[in-house]
Image (cartoon, rainbow, N blue to C red):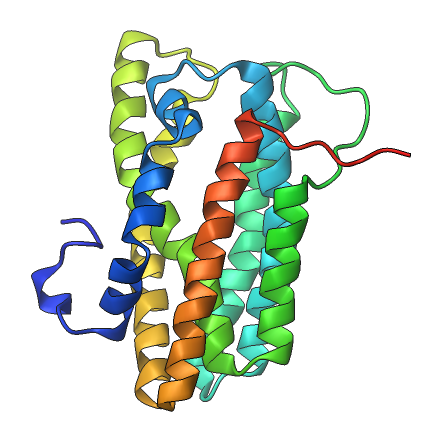
Length: 236
């Protein structure tokens, strides 16, 4: 059952966040980039660009999660964010490196720099984790877990069909990992952390948590969209 449809979750604060961003999430589901990533028709150079940006993003995201760990209200919560930070910094980046360092994708001559969306998203997460309350920082970090896990279910199913037709497809095998049980479980745990933070928060703080979740969801849309429709940095 999808993370978005568990009947036992009705009434949770994170359900309110999910409902609040319904139109944004619908726009994410409709992105050409995600459709073509799932059905295997995404141009290889676009996929390489996405992997490069995702690696840069994860390096920054791991810092935001480490900050959340340092500001957590109890050891168990701190352990979750710290473990998630380590995973983002090592395991996930290693998966990217296997493809980027191989010969299945077009080569790149120069070192990639963060896209406008990537830098803005990472900067927002680190700044929020640092300058806002722990609860608001956790709400900002949640979309990367939850939306990624939710979108990943459909992508993984599509990629499995692609692999059945072409076992040597250059990236379909990688896409099937989007629905890994470990990541789905982590997304559920991240929800628990945000629900617990909301239960201890004031009404004003919960409003700030909703705003942070919404902003991060906007960045989720922008991050995926600019992989296929890049917005170039201004040049002198």
